[in-house]
Image (cartoon, rainbow, N blue to C red; front, side):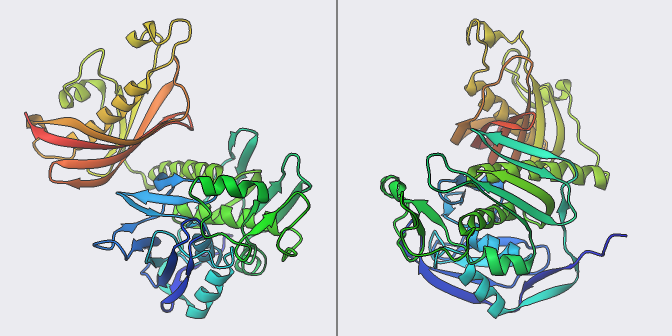
Length: 436
């Protein structure tokens, strides 16, 4: 018989920490505040007009070089993983986080100062609010460039990490931990971030590590640890697990599963969390018995002005008006663009993948207004386009779009295109609804 879920938790009161940001080098103050049940984590930039907020999620990750950076509507926050790990590691489900600049303080390079401050503020259960845990229901794996993360169903959170560097005195090291607040507090939270000495100049050339020094980061040289002994024999591996827990917090709820990571970093961590997010959404819809809005080709033609060969959405399989849409495009060898792109090596043009994303977003907007028959959608802006993998004949493209803002006649959306579980393209788009 399964134990009843624990109650959601938040802070008993506010607490602040001050220092400098690891990558920006700017003076920084972060304040953690209590939040009601089902709030999750909310970041606010108090130095910006209107104090704009960001709800951490994998789709908002804009950079993963030596940290996880979130960006939404021009608001950016660097290196969020340590403070998110501190909250998640202590089983704090709901918290408002206020930042006076674009990066939290790095403190000593670990999450210990965050944990100490949160424990000093006190943690309270929220009556009548059971924790919403996501339990991995089937095996899942993601792999890239010889690195991988695999996950299996497990009744708690267990993380196995294998650290390995080519041509380094560091030997391969494996740590297998059952994660709970005590293990997190005593082993993971005090473990500091690190880099290799030969990487420092490269980081500086990229505008990173401006606040890094021997007091807040372990520096690994060819001879050994440059700045004193490690706190633990496996401190470097522990810090990798700390980072993974911080990135896992982007899912927005506690996770149960056994994850095995081989040489993974922030980029692969975030991709795993994105897969978990999509699985979670699909499973919640099935469990909740929600009816999918299925829009077939004939109705799509009634909503959009496009026609062959420029109508690039075959079906919409899920739609929540004003919020999100999922559409399908079956890519066949008979597509006219394959005649010239490229003979003998057919690849779907990236611009047409983006166009298909925009058309799927157009269906969402047309289904979100009462007088759609008198409107037409114009695609007016695009940013942050990334093409991840080629699309070839026989693939089925799945488009997933979420609305960021929908005011008056202008909508901002973030769109992703997948083949199976592989992300092939993503973009931020702006569309306008105008009268015919």
